[in-house]
Image 1 (tube, rainbow, N blue to C red):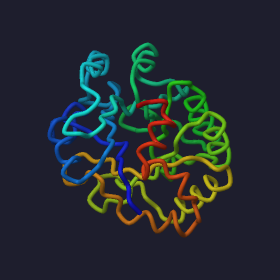
Image 2 (cartoon, helix red, strand yellow):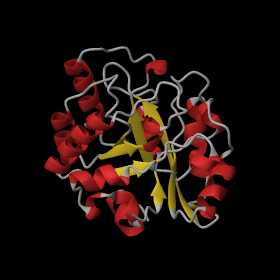
Image 3 (cartoon, helix red, strand yellow):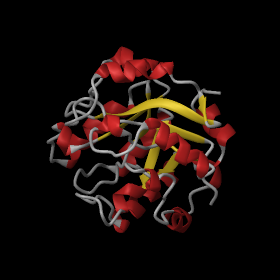
Image 4 (tube, rainbow, N blue to C red):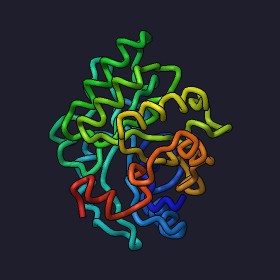
Length: 238
């Protein structure tokens, strides 16, 4: 599978990653990626940047080292489904990803409550992707999430970082991810297979997750990050 985009990566601005934005872009170019999204954590994450950082991202050129750089964030989903950046900031970004992180004070425990929170996030017009929704520590109803993602044109992520054996608080459980992918297939949802890189060598690394996609039978055209034109058209970008 030829993946030309990585839509989830972190720079020093996240507070717990280890490279500058320019280092991440340069390494992406060396790895022949055509599109990347810079998705630093929202300010609720300890050590993350102030909202001004996200407002100022628009000074970046669209292309750096011939890579299309999407100016974005990984906003933190709060208990009520709101996000940790003001709406006017989020509406001005090119790519808003959103995910649940316990470090950002998300503390719901019941599946129905977590599902309700994530559905509220998916229903926001500026949200483009939900990150690692198959985290078994925060269980959701995959049918409800997938149906809502389809209705709202929201991408659901397959996160390679979740399966990284060195990751603290590892999230990846193959059995759970397969159930998640089956719901995605059922509702014909668009997906992106991303690295969640926090260091340059992780960029574009997918931990062999393509085999799970193939096992479930996800259609090639539903994998957005294997075709630049299809991806940018889906995001209403050039």
